[in-house]
Amino acid sequence: MEWYSIQNIDTVDSPALLVYKEKMLANIQSALTRMHHQTERIRPHVKTNKTPEVCKAMMEAGITQFKCATIAEAEMLAQLNAPDILLAYQPVGPKIQRWVALQQQHPQCIFACLTDNIVTAKEIAAAHAKANISAQLYIDVNNGMNRTGTPVATVPELLLQLLQVNNLTVMGLHVYDGHIRKQSFEERKQESDAAFAPVAAMQRALQEQYQIPLPIVAGGSTTFAAHAQRKNVVCSPGTFIFWDAGYQQLMPEEPFQWAAVLITRVISIIDAQTITTDLGHKSVAAENPFPRVVLLNAADARPVAQSEEHLVLKVADATAYTPGQVLYAIPIHICPTVALYNSLQVVDNNAVTTSWKVIARDRSITI
Image (cartoon, rainbow, N blue to C red; front, side, top):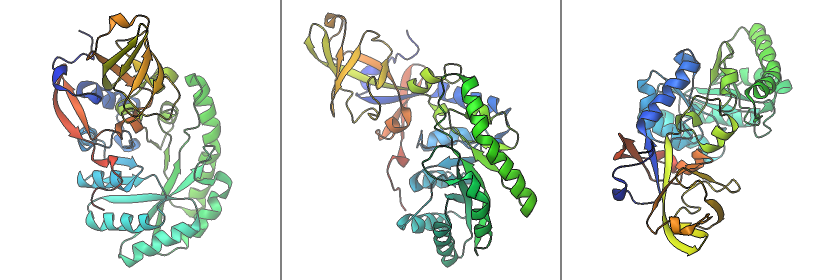
């Protein structure tokens, strides 16, 4: 039996996303080993898993601080009494009030969010003041991602402005360098080092000037190994928890294992070299070009078309497949794939034993 094969597969409808608990727990330990078990230096991003039981497993391993992308993900963490929650996003509009309301409901947690401009920061601080709570912000630094953040050169000016705002505490700096995706670790580390050097120099100068700590939360999955080697930098990988085929292809040297597997069934035999399965757009992240999955037990299959409920595959010999046959697949991108499922089917000892609800796939839980 292959490692991914499920003994009670006939009880699991498809498409489904299986989570192999033992491998997931091993991935947590691999991440902690990379950090020399300095749990104060790791802040996992929960956008990948969005699931309370997964976050609880990280907490049981000693992890106390987390990063998230949505208020729903933050609320999920707060419901678990996660001690320290960073919303790696700058709330604007109604999100500011939702963010404040979440903190009012969960005073037991430490909350912080990002900012990259003084206008939004003042709005955040004012909303917190009305609720009689203090706003805690990290400055979002753009060191090459060019998605959000203020350029490194303008951080000193923004910090000076923020320090003059009432009811606001600057907690540190946030740097995400997901644009660094070179094929070899040496190349990624070299590019990461070059992009991070001016951030580190600026941090040292500002800490000396203002005599305040400005810890740095840095990186994601592609630069985790590089940032883990820096002293006093908090790392925030997310995909490590489940891993995926995309990162396995990019970073085969990483110690993480595939812990999330899709199952799909053959639903039609079209001709001598074409079959169709039930793995449509609604079942696997479709933002990447083909192939969007790596099929574990159909190495000859090549995706050629996909619609909402169908994935059409070219195969060497369609007579090797039968309607109802189960295929196992690793998604190229696991994070948005998880968000397509209401629940994860949990595998223990080669059998699905329970399910975990993906409660933070929704934009809102209660707030």
